[in-house]
Structure formats: C-alpha cells, structure tokens
Length: 226
Ligand SMILES: [Zn+2]
Image (cartoon, rainbow, N blue to C red; front, side):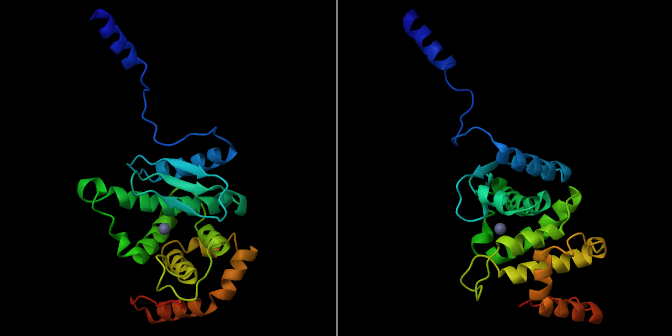
C-alpha cells in the first residue's frame, strides 16, 4: 500500500506544471519582434485580457488571425518578411488585438459574443478603427496601417461574398478616421513620399473626393466608399 502511495505521489509531482496546448518551437527573431510590438500595444492601451502572440512559420501569404477559442493571435512570418517598418506590423497586430478583445467581451466572458459570423464586415471596420486608436496610444504612426493594407490586402471585384470589406473601402474608412480624429498625422505626413502611400493616393482619389464633399457639407451621413 505504502509503495502504491509513493508511486502515485511520484507520478503526481512528475506531471507537467503547465498544460501547454501549442507546440512551442525555439523563439527566434520573428517571435521577438511580434512579442515586443504586441505587448507594447497591449500595455500602452491597458488591455485587461491575457492575449498571446505566435508566429506562423512558412506561410505562403501575408496574413494574421485571431483564434476565437483562446484569443491568441497568430502573425504569419510572411508579414514580417513583406513589411518594411515596425509601424506596419503594429497596424496588423493592433487590428487582431481588437478581434481578441471582442472575443472576450459580452456574456460569459465573450462565449456568446461571436456575432461577427453574421456581421463580419462591421467587425472589420471596427477593428481597423480601433487599431488606429491602439497605434496612436502606443506611439505608432497610424498611417502605416494604410501602407500595410495597401501592401498585403488584395482587391476583389465585389465584397458581397467575402467576410471582409473591399480593401479600398477599408483604407478609405481608415483614412477618414485618421482625418477626423488624428489630423496631425496627415499634416506632418511621414509616409507622403512612400510608394505605397503614393499609390493609395492615386487609387483613393474618388473616395477622398467623397470625403471632401462630406467635410464641406458638414454632414454626419456615412460615406459610401467605392
Ligand atoms: Zn479582421
């Protein structure tokens, strides 16, 4: 009997302390970059939820996703390869942090809050705007979100069958939000001569005209971007 108890005790103390549900690989340069930017955003915005960041290696396309089950955020390694500066990566992570926050809010710690299955486009716009706020708070330049989206966001003909709004609409909405809430970034525009920002200025000409009309008429109506 004594022997059985000792064996059981030995078994107990040899159990792993943490129940790790993901396979951890050696942390490399990418993990360090993502971790530093991610926690800077979380801390500057005093986000009260436990959020974990992972790098998804050997990704074919630049993307990022937030897991509904545990609010962890995976950044594809290609995002780091494609982007040029920390502000762009911060924009992509900040957008995902907004989703992770949504997944934790509501009834039963957000268990029933996943309404974005039915309303995904509004959640995307919300995440983009919140990303701008998160970036500004953490001292990142929010215009980099437009640069990053222009870089990695492809454009479908129509957004009707997609969970995401058209990239051009997202960029125009982000631009309007920065224009309204943080115009100082447009006055002192550090990205003005960046080729991807210049490209955005060309492709968004119609949409920026729509915004100009809205500002002139002082209307509160939502602009329908192309
Ligand atoms: Zn999203």
